[in-house]
Amino acid sequence: MSHMVNPLATPEQLYQRRSFSALPTELQDAIFFSTQCLTQAAGLLLQLPQSVTAQANVLLARYWLVEPMMSHEFSDISAASVYLIAKLSPYPRSPRDLALVYSYLLSPSSTFFHPSSAPASDDSQPPPPPPPTNIPNDYYLPEHVYNSFHTRLLRCESRILYALSFDTHVSLPHPLAITYLQALDFLNTSKSTISKRTLAYLNTALLSPQMLYLTSQPNALAVAAIYNAAKDVGAKMPECEWWEVFDVDREELGFLVVGMRSVDGWGRKMREDVERMKAGTEGGSKRGGMITRRDIEGELRRRGISLGNGNNDGGNTGVGSEEPVDMEAEMARRMDEKMAEIEGSAS
Image 1: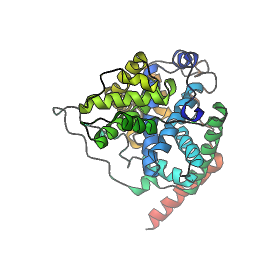
Image 2 (image 1 turned 180 degrees about the horizontal axis):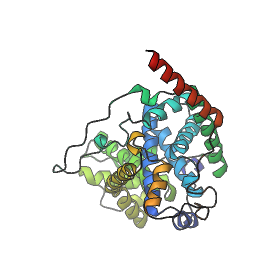
Image 3 (image 1 turned 30 degrees about the horizontal axis):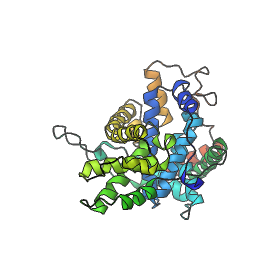
Image 4 (image 1 turned 90 degrees about the horizontal axis):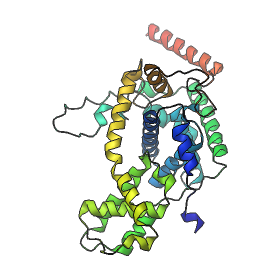
């Protein structure tokens, strides 16, 4: 049965993450939400099964439970999580595949976290702006940029493995939820309808700031998703306390039900916060919709929070620190720009 359970976060880990981090709680939530969404978007473009992408989401959450968020660029940690989990699955993806996908998602041509892709919350709101124009040069990947990405990818992968003591096992609640639905047999509702709704709740829970996948076992998550889905579609549930059959008590079920239902409204607020932070950073609109460490540093400055050595998120890398510059890659980049200028003037 060990393959059906996950290692859970301890109360001390959850407390230390919130209390001893140099980042305010709302900034931690914005980073977590946007990076998990980026991981899901990358999984779609890489044509990975949702089971692989969801495991990458859980692995990323575990890593940030024990390591400071600002130690690496958020998109690099996302890419390393996807790369690591895919490599261990029947669907491996090459570093170049990841480099191409993340280059597009982080470019201004991508609709990721663009206001045009935001769900409409109110008919009285003004219509969203048009989607960005697709400009292939925005996500063109020169060789020196790929080499730099490859180096960072391998560095982050090794850091994740070290931080998690090489424990990459992730048990997902999705298969259990389908099995439980077959056992319950909601007679007055289409199995397809309630199954889709259940899986939607489980996928949404990956984004929860309460880190539901790190605090509850898969069987409890599956039962809570079924309960929410049954309520939404008006399915007739057993009148007895049926969740106890699946080893879930009422208190845990209530916590998970509320936690899953709250993600939608919280996610809308996070999108607004991310867009606001991007708009307040110089050149933010030209760097795509994904939040970066530069955006977080700018937000901290606006709040008057020091970025000096005394503000070290967890004791590893300071909030204001940057990745070391690859001089060879920088020289190659400048040569590419110079050649582009020469070719442009010649034409």
